[in-house]
Length: 390
Image (cartoon, rainbow, N blue to C red; front, side, top):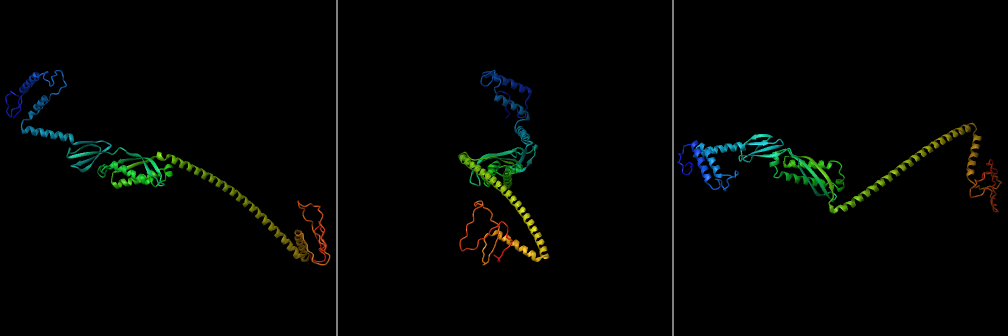
């Protein structure tokens, strides 16, 4: 039955609202409002313009939608209008320039939406998940790790990555960001465990970080995570505060070791330099000796050739001369002469060289009785031996 005010004439179901009836209704509603305490407003406030009248709002809505007719036809029109509004408001999605959209229809993947305006079925038939693919994400922390030599290192690191495949990022791994962090820690612990504390403290190149980046990317690709690692860095490597004093002692001992090694290398270099100089001197002396010996040998060979020529010319004279020269050289080096013959022997030999410990004018001791005849000494070389050989 069509809605009517109390006391009004009932309207037929197909009877439309007229302007006169609507104006009459407004006048009657105004009279009823004015008849209420407080000027017709709920709450009794006549000057409150911000008070909300629910009954008046519902009355105006009934008046506006009553033009479509009453009964099932009016309800159908309302349903159609609501569906149109629902489709118009929920079938459009705007994807930002740094984003990518994943279109799901009844929960099933349908495609990846590129930046721009896209039309699709409204909720709950279709859903669009937006993934930020232009933002660089970072995993950073400072954790304790065990080195190869059993030391505890406090490593401050960071890893930057971005999403390259939105579908894999959303569906291949349950918690992609947590999986990224766990994979980073696993790879970092494995690589730090291959280094000593001294090697970690003296990092000067990107060899270690490059290995970490390659192994981490390989592991993420194995997960099918759709993540690309862009940069890996180790900002600082230190020791925990609990063992800092012991580590300082180790550092001082290492510095002492390096200083002693430097001193040893300097001493070795100096010794090597001195040895090289001595070797050069010995080589020079050997060259000089070789040159002298060669020259002496050549001179002796030349004298031998001269003697040979003289011997060929006068063999007896040359033989006698050579014998005399040989005897002179032999006797000049030997101060003792033994006379085994029975005749008188006169031997003239040069006096011995004067020693610094023996005076030159010291008288000769007298020979003992019964001994061999005394040997006369003469500054002139011996030229003649009488009475046989001695």
